[in-house]
Image (cartoon, rainbow, N blue to C red; front, top):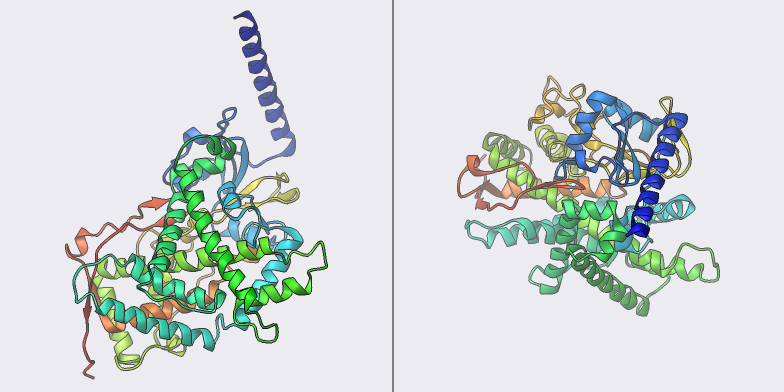
Length: 497
Protein backbone atom coordinates (compact mmCIF):
# COMPACT_ATOMS: atom_id res chain seq x y z
CA UNK A 1 0.00 0.00 0.00
CA UNK A 2 2.87 2.34 0.86
CA UNK A 3 4.54 1.62 -2.49
CA UNK A 4 1.27 2.34 -4.32
CA UNK A 5 0.88 5.69 -2.47
CA UNK A 6 4.45 6.64 -3.36
CA UNK A 7 3.91 5.81 -7.06
CA UNK A 8 0.63 7.76 -7.12
CA UNK A 9 2.31 10.79 -5.53
CA UNK A 10 5.21 10.56 -7.98
CA UNK A 11 2.77 10.41 -10.92
CA UNK A 12 0.91 13.48 -9.67
CA UNK A 13 4.17 15.38 -9.28
CA UNK A 14 5.24 14.41 -12.83
CA UNK A 15 1.85 15.56 -14.23
CA UNK A 16 2.08 18.84 -12.30
CA UNK A 17 5.62 19.50 -13.48
CA UNK A 18 4.64 18.69 -17.08
CA UNK A 19 1.66 21.02 -16.79
CA UNK A 20 3.80 23.87 -15.37
CA UNK A 21 6.37 23.29 -18.10
CA UNK A 22 3.63 23.43 -20.70
CA UNK A 23 2.29 26.72 -19.23
CA UNK A 24 5.76 28.24 -19.38
CA UNK A 25 6.44 27.06 -22.93
CA UNK A 26 3.03 28.34 -24.06
CA UNK A 27 3.87 31.85 -22.86
CA UNK A 28 7.38 31.81 -24.33
CA UNK A 29 6.13 30.62 -27.74
CA UNK A 30 3.34 33.25 -27.89
CA UNK A 31 0.70 30.74 -28.89
CA UNK A 32 -2.71 32.09 -29.86
CA UNK A 33 -4.86 32.57 -26.72
CA UNK A 34 -7.41 30.04 -25.59
CA UNK A 35 -9.08 28.39 -22.61
CA UNK A 36 -6.94 26.68 -19.99
CA UNK A 37 -6.81 22.92 -20.67
CA UNK A 38 -6.88 20.08 -18.18
CA UNK A 39 -4.01 17.57 -18.10
CA UNK A 40 -4.62 14.69 -20.58
CA UNK A 41 -8.20 15.79 -21.39
CA UNK A 42 -7.34 19.26 -22.65
CA UNK A 43 -10.54 21.20 -23.38
CA UNK A 44 -12.66 18.17 -24.23
CA UNK A 45 -15.10 18.73 -21.37
CA UNK A 46 -15.95 22.17 -22.80
CA UNK A 47 -16.64 20.79 -26.26
CA UNK A 48 -20.10 20.33 -27.74
CA UNK A 49 -19.63 16.69 -28.78
CA UNK A 50 -22.27 16.78 -31.51
CA UNK A 51 -21.56 20.28 -32.81
CA UNK A 52 -17.95 21.16 -31.92
CA UNK A 53 -17.95 24.12 -34.30
CA UNK A 54 -20.45 25.84 -32.00
CA UNK A 55 -17.97 25.64 -29.11
CA UNK A 56 -15.21 27.11 -31.27
CA UNK A 57 -17.45 29.98 -32.43
CA UNK A 58 -18.36 30.75 -28.84
CA UNK A 59 -14.72 30.66 -27.72
CA UNK A 60 -13.74 33.00 -30.57
CA UNK A 61 -15.99 35.67 -29.06
CA UNK A 62 -13.71 35.68 -26.02
CA UNK A 63 -10.29 34.84 -27.48
CA UNK A 64 -10.46 36.22 -31.02
CA UNK A 65 -10.35 34.76 -34.51
CA UNK A 66 -7.12 32.79 -33.92
CA UNK A 67 -7.31 30.61 -30.81
CA UNK A 68 -5.68 27.55 -29.27
CA UNK A 69 -7.58 24.61 -27.81
CA UNK A 70 -6.45 21.15 -26.73
CA UNK A 71 -8.32 18.05 -27.82
CA UNK A 72 -6.86 15.61 -25.37
CA UNK A 73 -3.07 16.07 -25.59
CA UNK A 74 -3.23 17.44 -29.17
CA UNK A 75 -2.71 21.17 -29.64
CA UNK A 76 -5.19 22.64 -32.13
CA UNK A 77 -5.25 26.17 -33.56
CA UNK A 78 -8.70 27.23 -34.78
CA UNK A 79 -9.10 29.93 -37.43
CA UNK A 80 -12.45 31.72 -37.41
CA UNK A 81 -14.05 34.01 -40.01
CA UNK A 82 -13.57 34.70 -43.69
CA UNK A 83 -10.69 37.18 -43.39
CA UNK A 84 -8.69 34.89 -41.08
CA UNK A 85 -9.24 31.73 -43.14
CA UNK A 86 -8.49 33.55 -46.40
CA UNK A 87 -5.28 35.00 -45.00
CA UNK A 88 -4.11 31.55 -43.94
CA UNK A 89 -5.18 29.39 -46.90
CA UNK A 90 -4.57 31.90 -49.70
CA UNK A 91 -2.16 34.62 -48.52
CA UNK A 92 0.08 32.17 -46.60
CA UNK A 93 -0.79 29.14 -48.71
CA UNK A 94 2.60 27.40 -48.42
CA UNK A 95 2.60 27.59 -44.61
CA UNK A 96 -0.88 26.08 -44.32
CA UNK A 97 -0.65 23.38 -47.01
CA UNK A 98 0.03 20.56 -44.54
CA UNK A 99 -2.56 17.87 -43.84
CA UNK A 100 -3.01 16.55 -40.31
CA UNK A 101 -2.44 12.82 -39.70
CA UNK A 102 -6.07 12.29 -38.72
CA UNK A 103 -6.03 8.95 -36.83
CA UNK A 104 -9.36 7.68 -38.20
CA UNK A 105 -8.45 8.50 -41.81
CA UNK A 106 -4.86 7.37 -41.36
CA UNK A 107 -6.02 3.98 -40.11
CA UNK A 108 -8.56 3.66 -42.93
CA UNK A 109 -5.99 4.34 -45.69
CA UNK A 110 -3.07 2.78 -43.77
CA UNK A 111 -1.01 5.96 -43.96
CA UNK A 112 -0.94 6.13 -47.77
CA UNK A 113 -2.71 7.99 -50.55
CA UNK A 114 -3.41 11.57 -51.53
CA UNK A 115 -5.70 12.72 -48.71
CA UNK A 116 -3.26 12.62 -45.77
CA UNK A 117 0.07 12.93 -47.59
CA UNK A 118 2.47 15.84 -47.17
CA UNK A 119 5.64 17.09 -48.78
CA UNK A 120 6.91 15.67 -52.04
CA UNK A 121 4.57 12.63 -51.93
CA UNK A 122 1.55 14.94 -51.75
CA UNK A 123 2.83 17.20 -54.55
CA UNK A 124 3.47 14.25 -56.86
CA UNK A 125 0.18 12.47 -56.13
CA UNK A 126 -1.91 15.64 -56.38
CA UNK A 127 -0.34 16.73 -59.67
CA UNK A 128 -0.71 13.26 -61.14
CA UNK A 129 -4.32 12.85 -59.91
CA UNK A 130 -5.47 16.21 -61.29
CA UNK A 131 -3.79 15.59 -64.64
CA UNK A 132 -5.16 12.06 -64.99
CA UNK A 133 -8.72 12.98 -64.03
CA UNK A 134 -8.71 15.90 -66.46
CA UNK A 135 -7.39 13.64 -69.21
CA UNK A 136 -10.42 11.42 -68.65
CA UNK A 137 -12.83 14.30 -68.85
CA UNK A 138 -13.21 15.82 -65.38
CA UNK A 139 -14.71 19.25 -65.94
CA UNK A 140 -14.88 18.70 -69.70
CA UNK A 141 -17.37 17.69 -72.39
CA UNK A 142 -16.62 13.98 -72.07
CA UNK A 143 -17.54 14.00 -68.39
CA UNK A 144 -20.63 16.07 -69.15
CA UNK A 145 -21.85 13.34 -71.48
CA UNK A 146 -21.30 10.68 -68.80
CA UNK A 147 -23.31 12.67 -66.25
CA UNK A 148 -26.11 13.33 -68.75
CA UNK A 149 -26.30 9.61 -69.50
CA UNK A 150 -26.33 8.76 -65.79
CA UNK A 151 -29.09 11.35 -65.28
CA UNK A 152 -31.31 9.29 -67.58
CA UNK A 153 -30.79 6.20 -65.43
CA UNK A 154 -31.56 8.24 -62.31
CA UNK A 155 -34.76 9.66 -63.83
CA UNK A 156 -35.88 6.17 -64.85
CA UNK A 157 -35.28 4.85 -61.33
CA UNK A 158 -37.28 7.71 -59.77
CA UNK A 159 -40.08 7.20 -62.31
CA UNK A 160 -40.31 3.57 -61.20
CA UNK A 161 -41.43 4.71 -57.73
CA UNK A 162 -44.80 5.68 -59.28
CA UNK A 163 -45.16 8.76 -57.06
CA UNK A 164 -45.02 6.65 -53.87
CA UNK A 165 -42.92 7.91 -50.91
CA UNK A 166 -39.32 6.64 -50.80
CA UNK A 167 -35.95 7.37 -49.21
CA UNK A 168 -33.85 9.09 -51.92
CA UNK A 169 -30.48 8.32 -50.31
CA UNK A 170 -29.30 5.36 -52.39
CA UNK A 171 -31.11 6.48 -55.55
CA UNK A 172 -28.83 9.52 -55.55
CA UNK A 173 -25.65 7.86 -54.30
CA UNK A 174 -25.83 5.17 -57.01
CA UNK A 175 -25.97 7.84 -59.73
CA UNK A 176 -23.20 9.99 -58.26
CA UNK A 177 -20.98 6.99 -57.51
CA UNK A 178 -21.28 5.76 -61.08
CA UNK A 179 -19.71 9.00 -62.30
CA UNK A 180 -16.58 8.58 -60.17
CA UNK A 181 -16.59 4.86 -61.03
CA UNK A 182 -16.40 5.78 -64.71
CA UNK A 183 -13.34 7.95 -64.04
CA UNK A 184 -11.54 5.61 -61.69
CA UNK A 185 -12.66 2.09 -62.70
CA UNK A 186 -13.65 2.76 -66.32
CA UNK A 187 -17.21 1.44 -65.89
CA UNK A 188 -20.58 2.03 -64.24
CA UNK A 189 -22.63 -0.42 -62.17
CA UNK A 190 -26.27 -1.39 -62.58
CA UNK A 191 -28.59 -0.01 -59.92
CA UNK A 192 -29.85 -3.48 -59.02
CA UNK A 193 -26.30 -4.75 -58.35
CA UNK A 194 -26.46 -5.85 -54.70
CA UNK A 195 -22.68 -5.71 -54.28
CA UNK A 196 -22.66 -2.11 -55.55
CA UNK A 197 -25.38 -1.17 -53.06
CA UNK A 198 -23.47 -2.80 -50.22
CA UNK A 199 -20.35 -0.78 -51.07
CA UNK A 200 -22.41 2.42 -50.99
CA UNK A 201 -23.80 1.43 -47.59
CA UNK A 202 -20.26 0.95 -46.28
CA UNK A 203 -19.23 4.40 -47.60
CA UNK A 204 -22.24 6.01 -45.93
CA UNK A 205 -21.71 4.20 -42.63
CA UNK A 206 -18.01 5.12 -42.62
CA UNK A 207 -18.74 8.83 -43.00
CA UNK A 208 -21.46 8.62 -40.34
CA UNK A 209 -19.07 6.97 -37.89
CA UNK A 210 -16.36 9.56 -38.59
CA UNK A 211 -18.92 12.32 -37.90
CA UNK A 212 -20.23 10.77 -34.68
CA UNK A 213 -18.94 11.62 -31.18
CA UNK A 214 -17.50 8.08 -31.03
CA UNK A 215 -15.56 8.66 -34.25
CA UNK A 216 -14.22 11.98 -33.00
CA UNK A 217 -13.18 10.32 -29.75
CA UNK A 218 -11.14 7.86 -31.84
CA UNK A 219 -9.26 10.83 -33.35
CA UNK A 220 -8.39 12.13 -29.88
CA UNK A 221 -7.38 8.82 -28.23
CA UNK A 222 -6.68 6.36 -31.09
CA UNK A 223 -4.38 4.00 -29.14
CA UNK A 224 -6.86 3.70 -26.30
CA UNK A 225 -9.80 3.21 -28.66
CA UNK A 226 -7.94 0.47 -30.53
CA UNK A 227 -7.85 -1.48 -27.28
CA UNK A 228 -11.45 -0.86 -26.25
CA UNK A 229 -14.54 -2.59 -27.67
CA UNK A 230 -16.81 -0.44 -29.82
CA UNK A 231 -18.10 0.51 -33.26
CA UNK A 232 -14.65 1.51 -34.50
CA UNK A 233 -13.65 -2.12 -35.03
CA UNK A 234 -16.73 -2.85 -37.14
CA UNK A 235 -16.14 0.34 -39.17
CA UNK A 236 -12.53 -0.53 -39.96
CA UNK A 237 -13.55 -4.09 -40.89
CA UNK A 238 -16.05 -2.61 -43.35
CA UNK A 239 -13.43 -0.24 -44.78
CA UNK A 240 -11.23 -3.29 -45.35
CA UNK A 241 -14.01 -4.69 -47.56
CA UNK A 242 -13.86 -1.51 -49.63
CA UNK A 243 -10.10 -1.87 -49.88
CA UNK A 244 -10.49 -5.51 -50.98
CA UNK A 245 -12.88 -4.36 -53.71
CA UNK A 246 -10.35 -1.76 -54.88
CA UNK A 247 -7.50 -4.30 -54.83
CA UNK A 248 -9.50 -6.70 -56.96
CA UNK A 249 -10.23 -3.93 -59.48
CA UNK A 250 -6.52 -3.09 -59.64
CA UNK A 251 -5.62 -6.77 -60.16
CA UNK A 252 -8.05 -7.09 -63.06
CA UNK A 253 -6.79 -3.85 -64.59
CA UNK A 254 -3.24 -5.12 -64.40
CA UNK A 255 -4.17 -8.32 -66.20
CA UNK A 256 -5.66 -6.43 -69.15
CA UNK A 257 -3.46 -3.32 -69.10
CA UNK A 258 -2.50 -1.78 -72.44
CA UNK A 259 0.19 0.89 -71.83
CA UNK A 260 -0.64 2.65 -75.09
CA UNK A 261 -4.35 2.91 -74.34
CA UNK A 262 -5.17 3.72 -70.68
CA UNK A 263 -8.86 3.36 -69.87
CA UNK A 264 -9.12 5.19 -66.55
CA UNK A 265 -7.26 6.50 -63.50
CA UNK A 266 -6.13 3.04 -62.35
CA UNK A 267 -4.57 2.31 -65.74
CA UNK A 268 -2.70 5.64 -65.71
CA UNK A 269 -1.33 4.96 -62.22
CA UNK A 270 -0.28 1.41 -63.12
CA UNK A 271 1.59 2.68 -66.19
CA UNK A 272 3.46 5.25 -64.09
CA UNK A 273 4.11 2.62 -61.41
CA UNK A 274 5.74 0.29 -63.93
CA UNK A 275 7.78 3.14 -65.39
CA UNK A 276 9.25 3.86 -61.95
CA UNK A 277 9.44 0.29 -60.65
CA UNK A 278 13.23 0.45 -60.36
CA UNK A 279 13.18 3.69 -58.36
CA UNK A 280 13.12 2.74 -54.64
CA UNK A 281 11.99 6.23 -53.57
CA UNK A 282 9.08 6.46 -56.02
CA UNK A 283 5.69 7.27 -54.52
CA UNK A 284 3.99 5.43 -57.38
CA UNK A 285 3.49 2.11 -55.63
CA UNK A 286 0.56 -0.20 -54.90
CA UNK A 287 -0.08 1.19 -51.42
CA UNK A 288 -0.51 4.73 -52.72
CA UNK A 289 -2.59 3.47 -55.65
CA UNK A 290 -5.02 1.57 -53.41
CA UNK A 291 -5.39 4.40 -50.92
CA UNK A 292 -5.73 7.17 -53.52
CA UNK A 293 -8.44 5.21 -55.34
CA UNK A 294 -10.13 4.71 -51.96
CA UNK A 295 -9.89 8.48 -51.31
CA UNK A 296 -11.46 9.30 -54.67
CA UNK A 297 -14.19 6.66 -54.38
CA UNK A 298 -15.30 7.73 -50.89
CA UNK A 299 -15.10 11.50 -51.42
CA UNK A 300 -16.49 11.36 -54.95
CA UNK A 301 -19.55 9.40 -53.85
CA UNK A 302 -20.80 10.65 -50.51
CA UNK A 303 -20.28 14.42 -50.48
CA UNK A 304 -22.05 15.16 -53.77
CA UNK A 305 -24.90 12.70 -53.22
CA UNK A 306 -25.44 14.11 -49.70
CA UNK A 307 -25.61 17.63 -51.15
CA UNK A 308 -28.19 16.52 -53.73
CA UNK A 309 -30.25 14.82 -51.03
CA UNK A 310 -30.22 18.01 -48.98
CA UNK A 311 -31.06 20.10 -52.07
CA UNK A 312 -34.24 18.10 -52.66
CA UNK A 313 -35.11 18.42 -48.98
CA UNK A 314 -34.78 22.22 -49.23
CA UNK A 315 -36.88 22.29 -52.40
CA UNK A 316 -39.66 20.51 -50.51
CA UNK A 317 -39.24 22.85 -47.55
CA UNK A 318 -39.41 25.91 -49.85
CA UNK A 319 -41.97 25.01 -52.57
CA UNK A 320 -42.03 28.56 -53.99
CA UNK A 321 -38.29 28.40 -54.62
CA UNK A 322 -38.73 24.98 -56.25
CA UNK A 323 -41.46 26.41 -58.47
CA UNK A 324 -39.34 29.41 -59.47
CA UNK A 325 -36.44 27.13 -60.42
CA UNK A 326 -38.77 24.99 -62.53
CA UNK A 327 -40.22 28.04 -64.30
CA UNK A 328 -36.72 29.23 -65.15
CA UNK A 329 -35.75 25.77 -66.44
CA UNK A 330 -38.96 25.60 -68.52
CA UNK A 331 -38.32 29.02 -70.07
CA UNK A 332 -34.68 28.30 -70.98
CA UNK A 333 -34.57 24.54 -71.69
CA UNK A 334 -38.16 23.32 -71.80
CA UNK A 335 -38.88 19.70 -70.91
CA UNK A 336 -37.89 17.90 -74.09
CA UNK A 337 -34.09 18.04 -74.04
CA UNK A 338 -31.85 17.54 -71.04
CA UNK A 339 -29.66 20.32 -69.61
CA UNK A 340 -26.09 21.00 -70.71
CA UNK A 341 -23.45 23.00 -68.87
CA UNK A 342 -23.80 25.82 -71.37
CA UNK A 343 -27.29 26.41 -69.94
CA UNK A 344 -25.93 27.46 -66.55
CA UNK A 345 -25.21 31.05 -67.58
CA UNK A 346 -28.87 31.37 -68.68
CA UNK A 347 -30.19 29.97 -65.39
CA UNK A 348 -28.97 32.51 -62.80
CA UNK A 349 -31.63 31.76 -60.17
CA UNK A 350 -31.08 28.00 -60.46
CA UNK A 351 -27.31 28.52 -60.17
CA UNK A 352 -27.85 30.73 -57.11
CA UNK A 353 -30.05 28.06 -55.49
CA UNK A 354 -27.40 25.36 -56.02
CA UNK A 355 -24.71 27.57 -54.47
CA UNK A 356 -26.97 28.46 -51.55
CA UNK A 357 -27.74 24.77 -50.93
CA UNK A 358 -24.00 24.13 -50.59
CA UNK A 359 -23.45 27.15 -48.35
CA UNK A 360 -26.42 26.35 -46.13
CA UNK A 361 -25.58 22.62 -45.82
CA UNK A 362 -21.98 23.48 -44.90
CA UNK A 363 -20.96 19.86 -45.39
CA UNK A 364 -17.46 20.10 -43.83
CA UNK A 365 -17.86 22.68 -41.03
CA UNK A 366 -14.40 22.23 -39.52
CA UNK A 367 -12.68 21.65 -42.87
CA UNK A 368 -10.43 18.60 -43.21
CA UNK A 369 -7.76 19.41 -40.58
CA UNK A 370 -4.57 21.10 -41.74
CA UNK A 371 -1.19 20.71 -40.05
CA UNK A 372 1.90 22.74 -39.25
CA UNK A 373 4.66 20.73 -40.93
CA UNK A 374 7.06 23.48 -39.77
CA UNK A 375 6.93 26.38 -37.32
CA UNK A 376 4.53 29.07 -38.58
CA UNK A 377 4.17 32.74 -37.67
CA UNK A 378 0.62 33.97 -38.28
CA UNK A 379 -0.78 37.33 -37.23
CA UNK A 380 2.01 37.72 -34.71
CA UNK A 381 1.38 34.34 -33.08
CA UNK A 382 3.59 31.24 -33.09
CA UNK A 383 2.09 27.99 -34.37
CA UNK A 384 4.65 25.28 -33.58
CA UNK A 385 5.40 22.36 -35.86
CA UNK A 386 3.04 19.46 -35.12
CA UNK A 387 0.01 21.64 -34.41
CA UNK A 388 -3.33 20.65 -35.96
CA UNK A 389 -5.01 23.63 -37.66
CA UNK A 390 -8.76 23.98 -38.24
CA UNK A 391 -9.58 26.70 -40.80
CA UNK A 392 -13.30 26.61 -39.97
CA UNK A 393 -15.36 26.65 -43.18
CA UNK A 394 -18.51 26.96 -41.05
CA UNK A 395 -17.33 30.34 -39.79
CA UNK A 396 -16.74 31.47 -43.39
CA UNK A 397 -20.09 30.26 -44.72
CA UNK A 398 -21.89 31.89 -41.74
CA UNK A 399 -19.79 35.06 -41.55
CA UNK A 400 -22.28 37.88 -40.96
CA UNK A 401 -19.95 40.36 -42.68
CA UNK A 402 -20.09 38.30 -45.88
CA UNK A 403 -23.75 37.19 -45.98
CA UNK A 404 -26.89 39.28 -45.45
CA UNK A 405 -28.75 36.48 -43.68
CA UNK A 406 -26.14 33.80 -42.88
CA UNK A 407 -28.50 31.58 -40.85
CA UNK A 408 -31.28 31.52 -43.47
CA UNK A 409 -31.62 29.63 -46.74
CA UNK A 410 -31.55 32.60 -49.12
CA UNK A 411 -30.58 32.24 -52.82
CA UNK A 412 -30.38 36.07 -53.01
CA UNK A 413 -26.90 35.70 -51.48
CA UNK A 414 -25.78 34.83 -55.02
CA UNK A 415 -27.88 37.33 -57.00
CA UNK A 416 -27.21 40.99 -57.74
CA UNK A 417 -29.81 43.76 -57.88
CA UNK A 418 -30.72 42.72 -61.44
CA UNK A 419 -31.14 39.03 -60.50
CA UNK A 420 -27.95 38.09 -62.30
CA UNK A 421 -25.75 35.46 -60.69
CA UNK A 422 -22.92 36.91 -58.60
CA UNK A 423 -19.95 35.13 -57.11
CA UNK A 424 -18.88 35.46 -53.50
CA UNK A 425 -15.26 35.13 -52.36
CA UNK A 426 -16.58 33.61 -49.12
CA UNK A 427 -18.06 30.63 -50.98
CA UNK A 428 -15.44 28.17 -49.69
CA UNK A 429 -17.40 24.92 -49.59
CA UNK A 430 -14.51 23.18 -51.40
CA UNK A 431 -11.99 24.83 -49.06
CA UNK A 432 -9.32 27.05 -50.66
CA UNK A 433 -5.63 27.23 -51.42
CA UNK A 434 -3.32 24.31 -52.05
CA UNK A 435 -5.54 21.77 -50.28
CA UNK A 436 -8.75 22.69 -52.09
CA UNK A 437 -10.82 19.70 -53.21
CA UNK A 438 -9.33 18.02 -56.32
CA UNK A 439 -12.84 17.06 -57.49
CA UNK A 440 -14.35 20.55 -57.34
CA UNK A 441 -15.02 20.91 -61.07
CA UNK A 442 -16.58 17.43 -61.19
CA UNK A 443 -18.82 18.13 -58.19
CA UNK A 444 -20.00 21.44 -59.65
CA UNK A 445 -20.90 19.75 -62.93
CA UNK A 446 -22.72 16.89 -61.21
CA UNK A 447 -24.75 19.16 -58.93
CA UNK A 448 -25.91 21.32 -61.83
CA UNK A 449 -26.75 18.57 -64.33
CA UNK A 450 -28.34 16.15 -61.86
CA UNK A 451 -30.42 18.75 -60.01
CA UNK A 452 -31.65 20.53 -63.14
CA UNK A 453 -32.53 17.17 -64.73
CA UNK A 454 -34.54 16.16 -61.65
CA UNK A 455 -36.41 19.45 -61.25
CA UNK A 456 -37.10 19.52 -64.98
CA UNK A 457 -38.88 16.16 -64.80
CA UNK A 458 -40.36 16.00 -61.28
CA UNK A 459 -42.01 18.06 -58.59
CA UNK A 460 -40.83 16.99 -55.14
CA UNK A 461 -43.03 16.82 -52.05
CA UNK A 462 -43.15 14.71 -48.90
CA UNK A 463 -45.94 12.79 -47.14
CA UNK A 464 -46.40 15.21 -44.23
CA UNK A 465 -45.92 18.44 -46.18
CA UNK A 466 -43.08 21.00 -45.85
CA UNK A 467 -43.70 21.66 -42.15
CA UNK A 468 -42.99 18.02 -41.30
CA UNK A 469 -39.41 18.22 -42.55
CA UNK A 470 -36.61 18.84 -40.07
CA UNK A 471 -33.80 20.35 -42.15
CA UNK A 472 -31.32 20.59 -39.27
CA UNK A 473 -28.56 18.02 -39.94
CA UNK A 474 -28.59 14.83 -37.90
CA UNK A 475 -24.81 14.89 -37.44
CA UNK A 476 -22.68 18.04 -37.41
CA UNK A 477 -19.11 17.13 -36.56
CA UNK A 478 -16.58 16.00 -39.19
CA UNK A 479 -19.42 16.29 -41.72
CA UNK A 480 -22.93 17.75 -41.51
CA UNK A 481 -25.27 14.98 -42.63
CA UNK A 482 -29.00 15.51 -43.26
CA UNK A 483 -31.66 13.40 -41.61
CA UNK A 484 -33.36 10.49 -43.33
CA UNK A 485 -36.62 11.51 -44.96
CA UNK A 486 -39.21 10.29 -47.45
CA UNK A 487 -40.00 12.19 -50.64
CA UNK A 488 -42.52 11.87 -53.45
CA UNK A 489 -41.35 12.44 -57.03
CA UNK A 490 -44.35 13.44 -59.16
CA UNK A 491 -43.73 13.56 -62.95
CA UNK A 492 -44.35 17.02 -64.38
CA UNK A 493 -45.53 15.94 -67.83
CA UNK A 494 -44.93 17.73 -71.16
CA UNK A 495 -44.31 21.46 -71.14
CA UNK A 496 -46.94 23.65 -72.83
CA UNK A 497 -45.22 26.88 -73.87
